[in-house]
Image 1 (cartoon, rainbow, N blue to C red):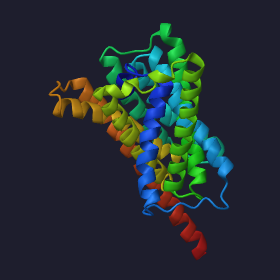
Image 2: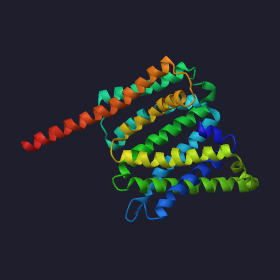
Image 3: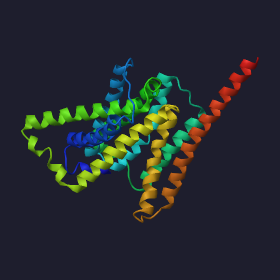
Image 4: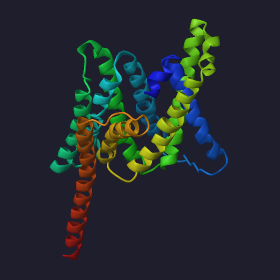
Length: 292
């Protein structure tokens, strides 16, 4: 929602540049003050650069151009399938095994999101295929990030990965934005969006909460649990949106939104419950084998 608001005042690449300028600047403060320690010496930087091409570069580029041609509801439906893509990639590249009960739980959360959007009258319009394809690529990029980050977090700390991602995002989008404006002779228009308080508030939300905080928390979660288990939490954003609308905006809480939310929550809990049960079973079997 905040991305679509920001796009009313600035071009896609300008929006991304401002977004990551805010997130990188905010995280740079504790780094410069020595509160956050970073050490990249002797670590596979090239793999971290590959990670940054997926997230934030690939994810946000595909997302912001996709949202120009597709609706928010279409984006919501497509993003619900991100845990499924993550599960498949994690199985192929990380050899993460997902039980049938975990699979059913993941699909239940996906169906919950689709059910809510479908009942609201939202759907996927074939006339928006370009936007839909770009949003799908955005989902695929995020799934790829989740899998690769899971592997890299054995070597890097969550803060190191997050800071590099945000820094690369800022530098890349700044270079693209400046190059585009210079070629078009519109460099003077780059700061025009800053005259709008709405744009500034949207950018602060996107930079601090949607980029910085999300990167730190996602990377920390990926250092603790499987990629597929972490990814399914993204579907809770639909539940949070419904709850916020009912509490803050006094919007009506419909029966279908309650049913869909329960499906999503049950799916998220089930995915992680059966992950824990599987882990406990493996530990028990290992202990029995050692005892023998």
